[in-house]
Length: 398
Image (cartoon, rainbow, N blue to C red; front, side, top):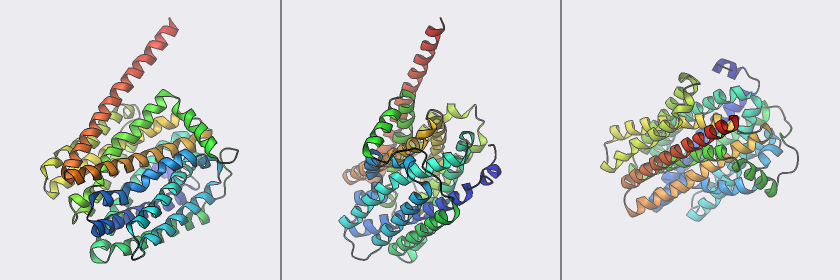
């Protein structure tokens, strides 16, 4: 599969794509509205960051106990239920007078549901498309995320400024209902990809199998840690520039879109694997000068440039799919999604804590330096693994 035209002519890809569009806008508007609502109520960078990205922390519980359901539950019914659960939870978040502990209780539940939904959705993408089409399909979804985040943050910023954060939350809840309706009405029922009942023990066995391969371990770490730390920088936009956070989020989404176009469509396949780690460095380095409190135009340009580096995830996802057996595709991709979002939650908590002790600008610089350092360590480990593989092949051949 070589073109987006072929991609969108694939049966059932378009409705899944449209439902994901509504979901992405809902997450973006809802996250921004909730972050502003919590910051206004508490004046705390830590709680604001956690309200936007903290639910990701609970994905580690979902990855531990629920993820076997990604391949063992019927996709259409499961995704419909996931989107409706998010709609209900987001509507509760809009209730006046909801205490901060109540907000985080809802977010914990949403994080658990999301861990299962991610595995089901990405496994379904891999099922609808052939393996050679997965890269292009995931590129389209990533570009969708960039466009929808740009739209969502722009819309959310206007709603928060002109109306109220609660209005943004209600709109997000309505969009989740739209996503559920599209899935239910436009996708055909499919049987589960694997047999057996979902269980914690099945989840643990599959996790252990996936983690037992050194090449897969390195791919997972590269997918989770460097970009997770940079998302920690993003979680501080509201406290760094309360009146311009929507602009910074929109610029980040625009840069991510550019990175996905670059990797998914512009770079030739033979060159893509070599640029995974350089793109991860690009993701971190532009945030280092935030220590100097750059003016908004410079900050926006730095954020846009850095977010091009998110295109590295496409390179690593393609390798993960190639290293994973088909019957574990949903679980493997769900583990990637849950681990990535968990790391984003950890990074948001860490960034918020550093900002409490220092300042948002200093915390952003520290997170960026940490991300670049981890990328360099992973680069060295990957090169050593390649040398060992070459040495083993040479030894066996001799």
